[in-house]
Amino acid sequence: MEQLLHYVWKHKIFPLKELRTTSGQQLEVIDAGLANSNAGPDFFNAKIKLDGVLWVGNIEIHTASSDWMKHNHHTDPAYDNVILHVATHIDAEVKRSNGETIPQLQMECPEQVQKNFDELKATDSYPPCYRIIPTLSPFMIHSWMSALQTERFEQKNAQLIERFRFCNNHWEDTLFITLARNFGFGLNGDAFETWAKNIPLRAIDKHRDNLFQIEASFFGQAGILADADGDEYYLKLKREYEYLAHKFSLTPMDVTRWRFLRLRPNNFPHVRIAQLASLYHRSYGLLSMLMEKATLKEVRELLRGGTSEYWLNHYTFGGLSPAIPKTLSDNSLNLLVINTVVPFLYAYGMHRGKEELCARATAFLEELKPENNHIIRMWSQCGLKVSHAGDSQALIQLKKEYCDKKKCLYCRIGYEYLKRKP
Image 1 (tube, rainbow, N blue to C red):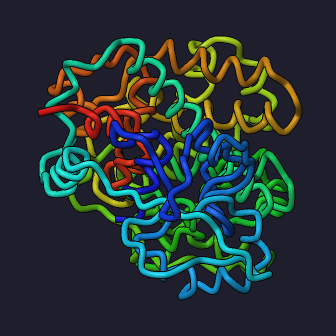
Image 2: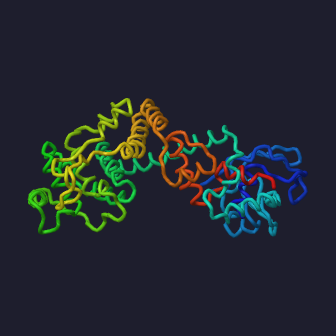
Image 3: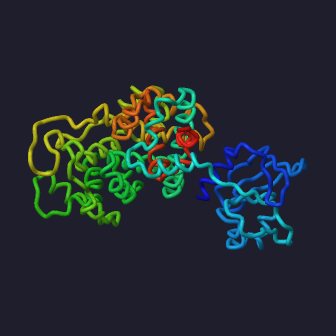
């Protein structure tokens, strides 16, 4: 209930009558203030008039006014700048730490808003607000999608900076781990990130000119060279890894972390690791190369890659398969651009103060076709037009950060839903 009261106050959805405090003072809300998501009062820098006198300060909201004491606000100087306390149930006076009484407003949630909110929470369909999608203005949709895309950029930027710190502020290593994670294409993403973090890249760099030794290191660290038996190539890799493991004190990861269920052969971890080994072998200074690529075509060609000869007719060690080059498909390349290249351009551009890289990240998204997954299909079925990958990224952000978390009160579509009339 308290969250809903926050919503009513923020959007000034007050009853159509004169507002008065519990002590009878005439109240005019000029500015509801800035919502605070951290510790302290709920809204900062609000402006109200009490009997014609202007007050500037903070607002605190509770379901019942007695919550003020339960939360010990009456002893906390951080709440001394509260100029108005808002509650549905007025069952106690509220005071500052110096004993001064704070004016209170009794405010109930409008019945229709409460009803609409209950509908959103109770609807099992996704998205719960599907009924109003066709009625929304193109301007409102565009504005919200742009904000969501920026949110997603910022969220991925925070993840990359965290990975950057793990890599001791080494951008090349950060790129490799990020790329590896996204080579898992969802199902094996966590396993690939664990694997990449388990590879001592400075040690492997000493053998970067030798693809066979890179493969031995990569497959060995993945725990895939643990079996005693195998074909000739497998046994050669195993012996090479044992030598490198002794030389660099390497410890393989748990092989059971890799998942194969419902994977197409082209997505088997063996194939993806072989592709990454080839990319690592031929792309020294990959970060600089990516930053220099001005077009999507150039980026795709850089990442498309391939494998060593053995993998032309193998998907795993052992059994032969028809000879097929194991290059990345256009769809896989687009996903790598969306989830690796674009976030990296943005994060690196922000870190270096290079606005042109951030602009290129946005341009790449707008040039790419939207992703085709169940999230995007559901929104499309509701009538929401998805034009490019920037839109699909915005809708993924909307699903994960708002719909899944039931944060309808913070969503602009949710706002439109709550204010609608029967």
